Length: 327
Image (cartoon, rainbow, N blue to C red):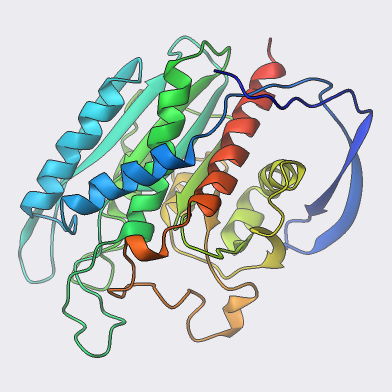
């Protein structure tokens, strides 16, 4: 079912652009696509996708919960996508323990040359290391890991019900969140960006979703996103504001986050931005993240359907706007 909203004929729209340093250059007049319609993002569905992941337990490497969640995600994506590839890789910790990981790659409209890459990580950090009472505790990772995956599963469902002229690839990266625990950060994106699932693969641009479900989330302009892909930041934030979600998508500056998008930019040479919940201007703080980060409070109690809707609707609208440009 398509939504009951459309963009009526407008000659121009205002956006705010940034230069390579991330400094705002103020409003620009840009052309507006005259008519776009898109399917409704279902935040209830996204929420249930997160709940299902949490129900497996913390998805930490080498655990039954990690294995069972991988099977679930593979099955869900296989029901939606034209092709699903499981990319297995391994790593050894500093203590000598061997870990096995899986990137899950779902593709839509394989024949299309113009493609958009969407990503999120699906693993849960092995320790709640910011929880001073017991930093060895496991935690649910409802937002940090679960939320981005939940949104992307709902987007995959919508894409499966429509025929687009552009291609979309969704990568669920494993092993993003284990840095400082005997493993490196972002192992899944490092592996994929150096060993792409398809020879010569590229995308017009990418969007990473990380911690996109918490109540009262704020998504400022993450530093590396501005450095590598300022025009894509403008494009996404403009779409969010057009859809009425300016309370979430802030024009403030965020810190530099070593996240999966960094390695997609550096190694794969695909401009990818990061939608990530953090404190605006947080680069001047000891911790740029919110109070739930890497703590037991990252559970379903902090997940907001309103936040999921803001992010999911923004991304879906943008996909269909891009699609309208090639029809």
